[in-house]
Length: 207
Image (cartoon, rainbow, N blue to C red):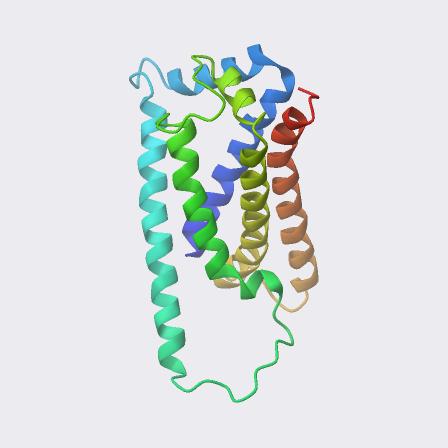
């Protein structure tokens, strides 16, 4: 779970960077989308890099979900009797909502792929230009609302996920805990804000 989580974090950062290109206008965003499709040519075919990345992400997702299911099963097996009184002392909201946050992200991911990758779902209209499709979609208020909820869930999931990953991978100790928790929170906030800037700028007519 930790290893696949690190891969997802790197992908999310790269994806956020790509989305921010929308703030620079159509030429920058469409140029970015085009370069992703020809990256690696002529060694790779058209969209070859994208398909390698997609397959890698799908495999990572399956492993991540499988690991989550295994950990949940072990946790329940370790204590078959419920606590008579349960108080959350050291846990955070992020840690207590990891499962539900993960399910929310998974459902959003399916919707997001159907909208922007396979183009099965069209919100705002059909356009050949990725930039025009992106802008038209986020001019629809309910899509922006869905996106905001999904990004908040992603931020909470990442905050606890990064903290858990550094512990699992042996990068944490008592002296580093405060700094690592602050770093996880900061990175999560950067990702949430970075993803929300383009759609909110479009929704409020700035872009």
